[in-house]
Length: 127
Ligand SMILES: [Zn+2]
Image (tube, rainbow, N blue to C red):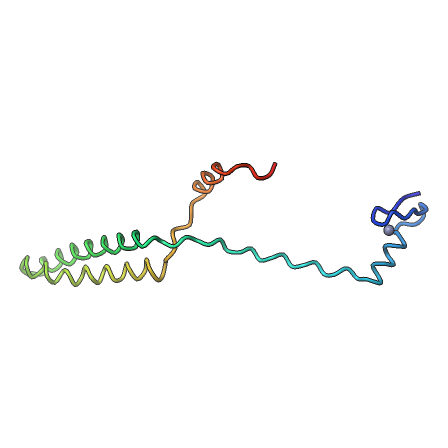
C-alpha cells in the first residue's frame, strides 16, 4: 500500500503510478515551463565627465609634447613648434575624447578582487 504524494490517493502495491494523477495529466497537460527570464545585463556605470575630461587633457598635453619634440627635431624653431604642436595636442585630445565618450563610455569592468570586497561589505542574504 502506498499513498500518492500529489493527491493523497491510496494505491495497491502493484500499481506503479497514481491513476488519478495520470488521468489529470492527460486531461490537462501541464503548461510548458516558463522560460527563465533572461539575465539582465548589469548596468555598467558610465565614466564620470571628470574622468573623461581628465583623460582628454592628459592626451592633449601628451600630444602637444610629442608634436613639439617631433617638429623641433625636424628643424622647426621652438616657438613655431610650440604653436604647431597645439594642433597635434588637439588631435590627440579629440581621439581620446572620442574613445572615452563614445566608444568606451563605461567604467572598466570591476575585477574579481573588487567583487570580493563589495560582497564582504554586504550583509549575508542567505544561509
Ligand atoms: Zn495521485
